[in-house]
Image (cartoon, rainbow, N blue to C red):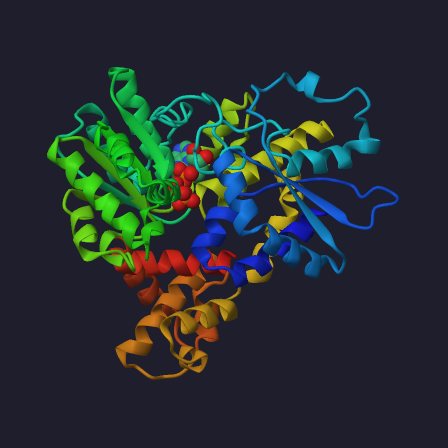
Length: 481
Ligand SMILES: Nc1ncnc2c1ncn2[C@@H]1O[C@H](COP(=O)(O)OP(=O)(O)OP(=O)(O)O)[C@@H](O)[C@H]1O
């Protein structure tokens, strides 16, 4: 199975599935290399999933779809083999990792295996593929479900997460007081899960008796369904209403689930009344949540709502250097800049890119430099180059704001057209290598100062207008595929 097949399959699934579902369940998967045997008629793609909940969910909801997409793209039958990942092992020494026969002749196949097998390849600390949502693979039987690797110490601080981190530190130090509930929102893979685990871990360190529970919203939904079937709502209440700290991830998943919302509302009220703390995460701010009862969304907003932004270049570099150091690898700064410049979507993808570069270096016995990084990331870079062009941006933005693509080049000035055009100019500057005059030319021969004005205006507004920021996130994620 080539990584290209998986990437092309993913492109297809991304187009078919709602973005939220794709990002949550499919994007974090990393397939394992499995060469077809001589008599094989069906290609097998093996995927390890970090925990039982995810395994069951992906198997029941998505396996058929994934197989179908891969088979279509491959032009022959592809079977998906889902297994539970073993617990992440500590990194063995580099010498132990390199098999004795790993000379140049088989370096490529080893590399393939390393790239595509996150649990077999050296795992990044709390890496996404080994542990995409932070549900704990390490201390298996704990009831709080916290991943002990996700702490404030391992979270790189920067402007992008400054507010959220400060608020989270505050809650960890004085739970039940200010900022209750704390609502953290932002795009995928930006560190929301990491941050809530950090609060839970910090609180337990100070007070090991504290009753802390982390869970993904889907787990809450599944608990409600189970208790509904068994008519054991008292058990549900006993479980949730007695906590000191409830950390609940991705509450946008409650959309349209009335009974779940009702139970969550009850738990929410009970916890706030007894001054227990609640921290929630979501892909959007409370008022942006759809199909969630207003009495809940208004309560979500009643404490403190903070955003996590995509990290800026310097923060991405710092994250790469920190994660490489945690792997006992020295990452030259120019290489960190090269990766950070090319992988901008989110930290999860940054980690994925780093993992590829480290694996490539280890298995090819070559030092890490820009040429090696370019080679290791060539699939990713070519997809990026293929996807993000000014034309693509114009079309995506026009579709999003429901205007005609032709309006991107037209001289029309009503705000309903001028604003999306400015947003497209901003994205063109941010996501392509085109200069201001080149962008102006592609927007109907406009002057470069018009583009500069748009870039500055949208950039400044983005930091103060959560709604615009959210729309830009969605556009960026769509464009990055
Ligand atoms: N500032 C940071 N410093 C170090 N690691 C980070 C940082 N931000 C994110 N990460 C890492 O990036 C990966 C993705 O982060 P996380 O799972 O917390 O994202 P998320 O915002 O919850 O995404 P999703 O919406 O998909 O659930 C994790 O491995 C996390 O440890």
